[in-house]
Length: 474
Image (cartoon, rainbow, N blue to C red; front, top):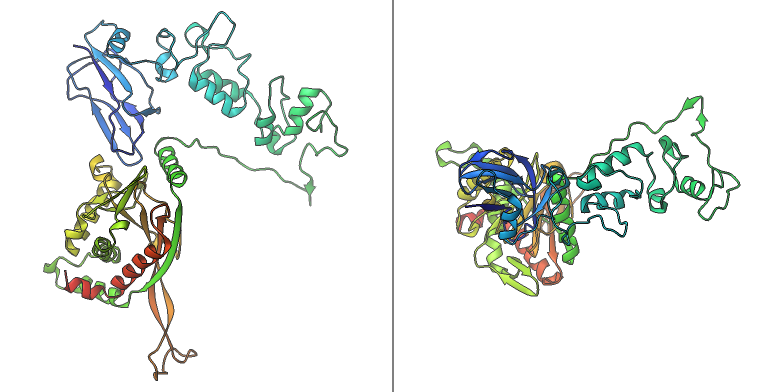
């Protein structure tokens, strides 16, 4: 029986996954548990198994494609079976697949997802090719298509761009077709807006839009200052794709869909540092020597959140969901980018348990062994940049959460001595300097007001200042 393999949904907020690599090729015989491809989200990398015994009839996407969840990625069945018929029977379209996958097959019947050649003379252009051309300001007329039936595919657009001189952003916006000069007046020979106008109006170098010639056209090269030929140097352009693109999209979506507002505060950490030092040098059999400052902060936050349920919440549409349990997201810096694994039921765990779980999850993220289910379901997130010397920043919400706490570096701050005590720091009578840790709390102002958020931040600061009492009481 034939089978259409789809891109699974990994969590409620994941809309697409990057298809990193195919582990099979068309015509391969596979078992149900054979890994077919490797995919990644902004959180994890995982494999998709075949799901049935059979033959790979068709791979519908190319490695590197950003595939929407629940879209077909491959067709399996009996050798020689018509893969297009299998898709049609399953009620699926082929149109969303990549050009690279389509190059080896004839185009499927016309659908809203594909452009096809018509008797009216319209160009046959794939959606990906059209998008790439529009983004680069490249006219499609004159490009030879190498796809089925002369269809212009993304590779054709990239080849045309390779042969075209570089353009400035303004020149790209002004481009409307025509022959371009081989070199422009911009840095490193880039074509400027004036070059585009000159080519379109044939008014010579230095033409402004509309065909008006400037009195003092820009020089063709930079001036020779003190005998030196000042050049632009090497320019490296790196496409934003894969996991970096997914993270970028998620950050932009977070800012677009919530009213984010950040508050800053600081808490004295003299007692916390003393306790941490005692744990570090204490009896090894207690298992506390690897407790970190961040572990103590996670512990304190997990105890304060239940007192402020509106902070331990999700905003989904017009509904606010508050949670009794604290599922604490912990931001982790990895070679693949930012990940946020989740410490489940953190408010029910001891300090030692929180520390152990935080380290296990961080290691799994950094080594690529994290499971998708360990990267979803957080109700509140903590992100720590203090070890990098950051004293204040604006954390971006891990939506749909309504708050995220940024942990900053430790700094000495002046503290007034009790009345009548004047020893203090030399040169500062009545004042002493004590270590304080900074906090940056970002909230979704749509559902959390400034004053309640400030009270929560104050409570967290007090809990960190009196962390010894909280440890005794839990």
